[in-house]
Image (cartoon, rainbow, N blue to C red; front, side, top):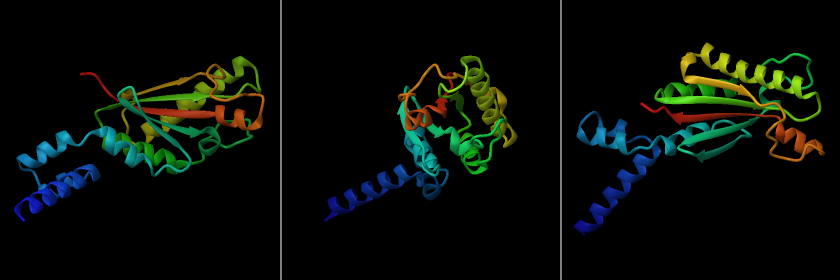
Length: 179
């Protein structure tokens, strides 16, 4: 009977640790600091970012990358570039605040419908706008690197409308900074 209680207690501890609530339930004692160390950002950051709708979230190279279609962040079919989905930016900024030890890499990509020069300028502007929106919401500019890649790194075939839509994207990578 004692072994069952021990297993149940261990199961509850591990379950709470995976949900990110152990530190709240254990307070500030030695178990809490151990729980904080064992609670990996790689586990809780993707769970936090799940609040972004219609995005792809991947763990890679010691970080977490979120891919957001440009059409869901920026006003589609406009001559200018303007962020119109502040909710996604708010969630990304919340993640940046929740994990202040992480660097943030913003990369923007386009399809191939316009000239290569225009696509580079457009993607640079999109990346800069996302960076600026995060800075406006309290994230330090020194933590954020923004770069536009234009049409140079397609993930789908630009010959189809679906492929072009997939290629118009912004990726935001949260990665531990090296101290």
